Length: 588
Ligand code: ARG
Image 1 (cartoon, helix red, strand yellow):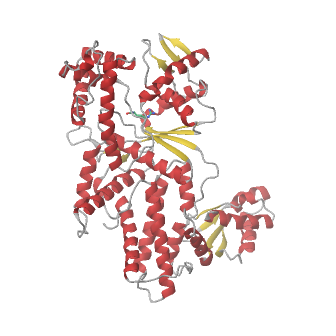
Image 2 (image 1 turned 90 degrees about the vertical axis):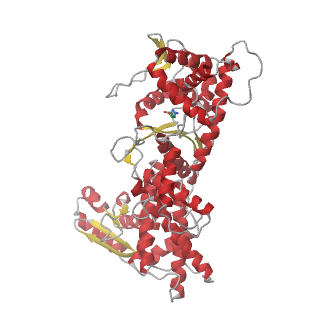
Image 3 (image 1 turned 180 degrees about the vertical axis):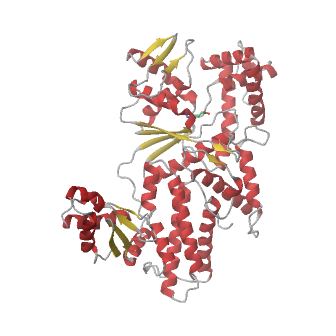
């Protein structure tokens, strides 16, 4: 379905052509003076140069043609050559009615669906999720949902970190504590125990301990590096131990991601890309792309146009060990083989941007990926505390994601008013509100920017917050419940009638932005555009709600129209928040 700007542009185009001007000037935009008009066209100003005419004259020519158009209530030429537009109420209502008949409210599916891999989450096994993992999970999940809504074939992959030094550290620390275990006995040939020698809480204690200890004791660190290398070259006992780490960790990670309402299609790991490394390295050498530099195998990726130094991409260390780079490149090989995606989007901390620049250049140069495959880095900024520094616990430690979520849930509980709920409903509702607070607080900022995690503001039921949006949806749900309870049967064949007040018009104008909002959010990988949309629509609806009698309106025709409009707002809002990864409760 054509969006409203498209429809306005169609009329403008006809008029520009009719008046003898090129239709490329018939561009409509939202008004930047909403107090004066709803939409505007600045084309006359641009056309003036080509036609050597006063812009005002061109604007007047266009207005003369469109003055009687049934689409516009008012179309006026304003000095020095703007065309201001106010839509006809019937035309606007007609558009809104069309939205109600479409399952996606007029937001068409793409006619060229792409296969897109989204690499997000960034979790590592054996380490608990901390607040640093919040942003990639939230942003990636939203981008996935938006792209899927538009009709793309999207594959979300958590790409677990499971192949580096942390595993070596856990191996040697476990060995120190339990040297008798068969994993460390190289002559052991039997079956290893099915049960892991540690629980998730053990791992959460072992890793930070070993990591801190290795920083103080270089021989311990070397031992861990050695264990990592042995794991990577296939030492049987270490592989068995690594498998235990994965099983124990993944189970726990799945539990937390599920709680966050973040769902991956793939639980691939860095180690899954290892089988692709030997051939990839061979091809890079044979293709003449890689060369030895100081013992290491590297690919030069700098370009003449670079303004800053882009170091070579290292493929193998001088001792033959592979690196983070190697794994990421081999993962590209794997993804191409398994899915042949036309885009891969990485949602990763923006401090890794140079790293990904190297990886992408290397992938293109060595032709492990087709030239026309988009490799996109969506780098996000840091979540800061109120002091403007990266969010930490009170004593300066990293804050576990679960602890943060629990904190927010408790704060939300203390603000909830509706108490005739059973225990289950209370906790489910509090979780939904808490997630809305956290996710909306994050997504309403442009992803690349840092932001301040401000708990009080995020959980507020007023203002530009997740809970406020949910509150609006709940308000509409209870309005519709009241309609049912009072036995009101609305005439479904009757369309929504043209607006009769400013607040109603504002609701309609907000709704009209749905299609272009979703498309822009996808094109620009910008969930914050959806946040802006839901906030504006919620605000418009709440003003309309306060100013008008809806369920109890004596004018039955108007009542039905208002109910239908409210229902549409509720449906659109619920769909929109789902694209953000939020869920609305029934009451709150
Ligand atoms: N696990 C990594 C980290 O903790 C993030 C992974 C990002 N994705 C990737 N393909 N490198 O930094």
